[in-house]
Length: 92
Length: 150
Image (tube, rainbow over all chains, first blue to last red):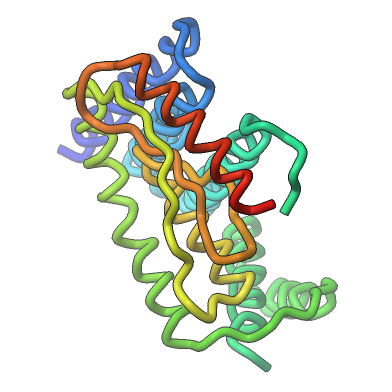
């Protein structure tokens, strides 16, 4: 049962990855691509790690650390990229 | 000690114990001493109630983010807009960081800029077809915002 649940999480994560990463090739604004990337990188990767967490619970501490770092770093770097993409200059 | 210092030390200890996964006495002593020895900058204290609310909002934001992701995937969200959101009064830098984190964490919204006069500039996607006019308008809005802040 848990095995199936973990595979479901991993598959959802992979779907999120592809859905979010493929639009990078299209011609939309940088910010629009960032929205889909946050689906792919933050939520997709988190879902894959939750799947791994169900599969190998003995490594829970490192996997939990990975989830926390993914959430924090992806979000903060997303903000940094968004900040840099908007016309520079006025740094208030 | 103010609340932000407590959260700071709790965060350091949590990272240390997650990284080492070892609860022997020696490791606990090392972890606690590192948590206290690492330098920290002075920050203005926020209210404990505000901190607890923001932390609770982060817990809620995780399922919220997945719901938004599925909405974006199933229904086309092609309209982009830039809106200004007011910062709640009396936010300390730590709380503002967490606010920006919360807004950016959910897939539909990204904070573009924080204006020190008390505004977040938020970029958001909405349902509907893509119009070039919208994009023009949003870039116009951006320009007017810049003028406003100068």
